[in-house]
Image 1 (spheres, rainbow, N blue to C red):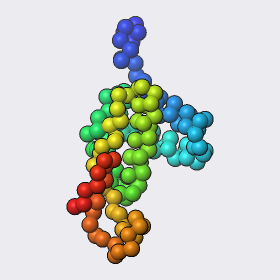
Image 2: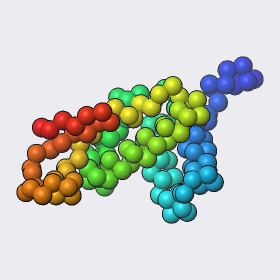
Image 3: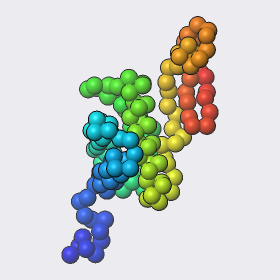
Image 4: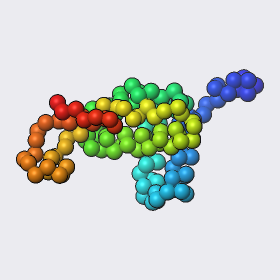
Length: 144
């Protein structure tokens, strides 16, 4: 009876439910292959486990930033910067979908400070690969 009176007491991970709905929607309506469904489901569910049982609307940019940084420094199986960035892009896509469905007001993953080593040759620059590190956000690039 307590749960019926206060639905927030129910032991439901709304985040994982939203992930499941997102993946299903993308598979049915967009060019997600079975392989991309499997890999994205695994990454997003591991992210949800890390975040804990939570509502998507309560997730903050600070929480996502901490998770992103943890990916690279975790003791078991730390990720490269590129892999951590691809994981973040998957989370960002989930929030873009949730925003489009009016389930969140805005995407907390949009303005995170993430770092990638950029090889100027691969970016179209014919110069010698620079050792400068460029931090990218959606609206700017900052060279450090």
